[in-house]
Length: 275
Image (cartoon, rainbow, N blue to C red; front, side):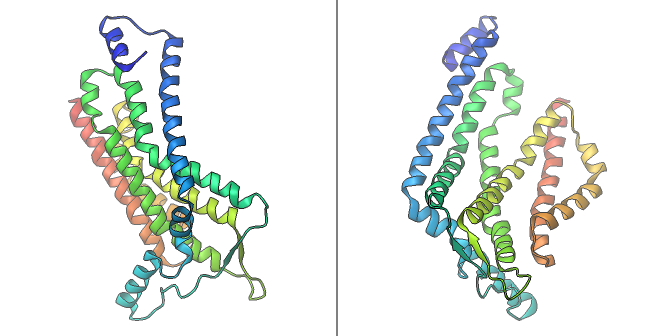
């Protein structure tokens, strides 16, 4: 059943049965899966761009983030204290299928990231007929804002959190007798999951929007526990950013706290619309 047919059914006062809803959902899922697979194939074909330029970017000292860190170091301390002069590890592969399997893994992850707006659009198309005109008006821009927050999170994870973590963990040594030879699977998995997780974390304002919409969360509660949220954010920043220096932890904490404050405004906006 197409979306316009679904709308006609609802306008006639008829309700869809459970299996009809499942069948309708299946069609949207299939479209999303096809979009992800198509994007994954595109990512798979562009192997050099994806691996040499993007994935392996943070293991080069001329990476954008390291250059900005060095400029900041000279500005703050007038020294090269925070400059990345060398990458303290080399990548290796010990599994005969390792490089090919990681190529497939990154292709699917990249395919999902590229197709994310389309997947959200399919989700919105499925739930939209069940909403009232007022609810549709409140949720207008769902796909645009959710996609924007997701991609901002991806960029933050790739340019800030991942390079800082990779540089610290990759160069950390318990003894000069032990050299770091990082397995390709470990590196790719760490970079991909960290970056992808940041994309999901940046969906916090959208999550708060829907929680506030159904009355589970309010701006009053968020403001009341703001100081506790700040402590949690600082602890979380220390966990997510393994580098021991305060600069990298602050770089992680500021965006998270900014998301929290934006979420308060989002919850307040939802409450005002209910009045």
